[in-house]
Image 1: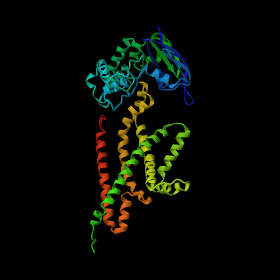
Image 2: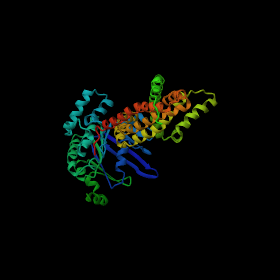
Image 3: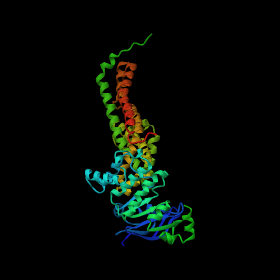
Image 4: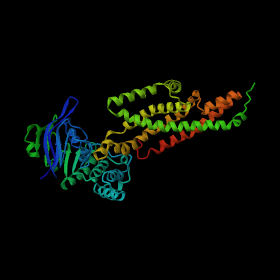
Length: 241
Length: 223
């Protein structure tokens, strides 16, 4: 299977502190990869770096056919960004736009779709995430779970080749988590390439093809759940959930 | 002995007062427009991390904010001609008022932009928007709801500050009134008349700012 992401010797510093330490790994197309590890281990920083929202200090990331290094020009970075979708912990829906406008805006601007085609696509996605009746509501008037599902719909609208999900259930009340998890399972079943940071170990167990365990910015183990849980430290970490 | 009001003086000089009234409105509108535009430019220049851009901008803005507008007017009007550049009172007032409003509005605009959570900008960037598209389509439409009520306050001050231009002989309301007073010796009538004229300009703006504040609540959850 072709690689969706290849990372080589990736380093990142915050000031003097090395937060990502010589990372090497590959993610195959259609695979679901979960990043786990204790708080502050660099999971979210790695995910944001993969989304090219953070600069890195050395190494390279290859996305499908495009290689990004420290010196890559903005035009390559923008091209890669258009092929990656990220869903944030805090949803980040645009509060001045209705749910449907949040989806049609990028479709019209980035994909250059007409308004009617954008609306048609947006409604199909809203139906998929079970939010069609909320299309004209502003995000502030939705529950956290509804906002997160709308944010996922917005990300899916641009048909990203790789989807990154950053602790997407962490800001939600427990009763709202179920709907979002159902949606993620559905996306995994569709064979999408996804990288997710999650503390939901039952979800990780269920959908991950690959798990990367990080500690202090370093990869300690990678592989499937049975492989990595042979490491006593990781076994203790997993048992804590 | 009770003061005897002679309101006929006001009507006698109504054309001169109307001209002053229109000059005040013109100077206000022009300096509000260009001052806000320049304020927006300064707000973005301050965000640029390059030391040769950021620090001179901060230095200029802090100087403009520290100096009384009257001092700026007089400096422009009397000092600039020393360097061989002739400048009219109107131009000095226009430049002074524009720069002063730009300095204050840049801070209002900057704080409005920074009050928008970073995630709003980042989500646009992650979807493939350029930095300018993210700012113009996502951040500014949200920030203006927070900026506009404060800007309206600055605009009201700006209209009142145009009266200071009378010191450098700009034919706005106060200067016009002073000239008429020197000919008629009726200060109370004329100062009362121009006070009413200032209220005629400012009251609609106060009402507009109330309306805007109410209108801008759309899409924002009331807590």
